[in-house]
Image 1 (cartoon, rainbow, N blue to C red):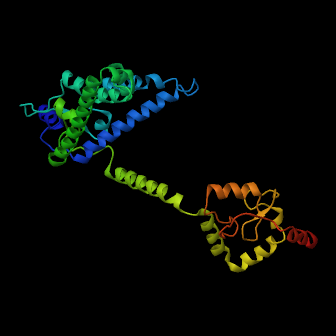
Image 2: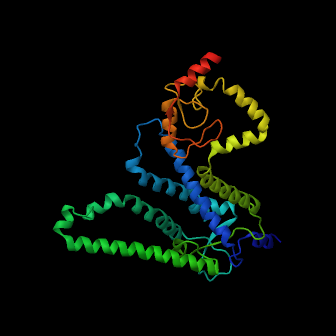
Image 3: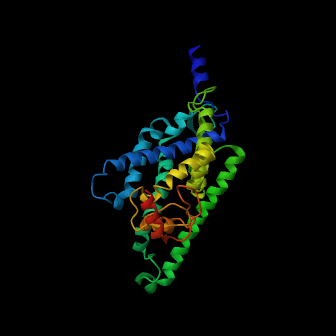
Length: 321
């Protein structure tokens, strides 16, 4: 009985894993790496600015290897896979039961994950060492043929790697195995860690997160296109009604010259922009420079070029007050 229970609880490499689960695991791993780097960099926020910049690629690789040591190397599963009840299985094995990754396969996964990223981050300092600096350098003028050939070879290798990753992703969409190229090279396949297990991160949570992020992106795109001042004036007019607006306007006419419509202080070099409200010259000028379609924040009227306040009107208001 115990043997049957153990066999039932062990991973079954023949049960297919959802593609979305494998992609979610990769996203969770990337988010964890970024969170770990953010926490680490915050430890040095009171130090000299740019202290970590010269060694940032090495530190990122070191943090990844540290995370790899206590997750993938220990139990053949990343943090994202553990949250989604997944685990790496030795692909191509003739045995029908689950077999964990060998140390060599785990090492290959670590090198293929951290190595290319480190090379990409360090390319600006490594290329000049082999004479592939900026065009017109001493190396290129002396040995132009060799450097140009090496540059073309590196560009070709990078393009082939990206194209192979794209082809691998298309194959993954078809058969549901190996979402990234490093897994296919290392022979690592994601399988369910326990049969008939529920996801620790439910689909309801994932759907809610996707909807919220989509809504947030939509607002970030939409808000800069909206004229908030005009919208605010329209809502205020709709809520308080025309009668209260007229009553409020009649009271404001006696006081509007005493207050800038933008800063709320006594107007300095008072100017008007086509409506009855008064603004400081520097306030209205700076706002018009920042927003060519500026509207009056008090009434929502379209603004014109600032004009000095008519002193006759101002003296009349002084006499009436």
